[in-house]
Length: 137
Image (cartoon, rainbow, N blue to C red; front, side):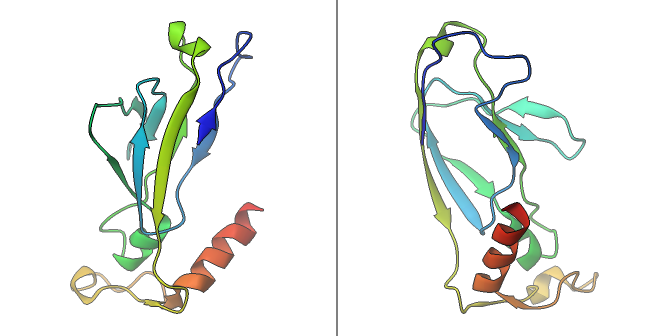
């Protein structure tokens, strides 16, 4: 993904990518040193996820949250615009979205429902993705 450098100061409240969660199971994110990635905590606070050299950010998506009965929760995140000299640099990142085959059945894992009944009924990975896309667009 390419976020172009800014030629002029951003407007108040402007972001590079608005708050969202990923639809699939896991996302692997490789980011450059321009940074700007923030994640939302369970208490709804936004915190910086700094770019650490030679590391990969592993993000849990909506499908994994469903699959694990909320044992692993989907992470809301956004990309903010730097407020220092990095504003004049482009930001680059590579996201690898891991998603099961479309016909794979996604049912609550037995180990995640021992004490709590399944929150969601089974669904195919393809139907889950289609529903998330329809809700977004």
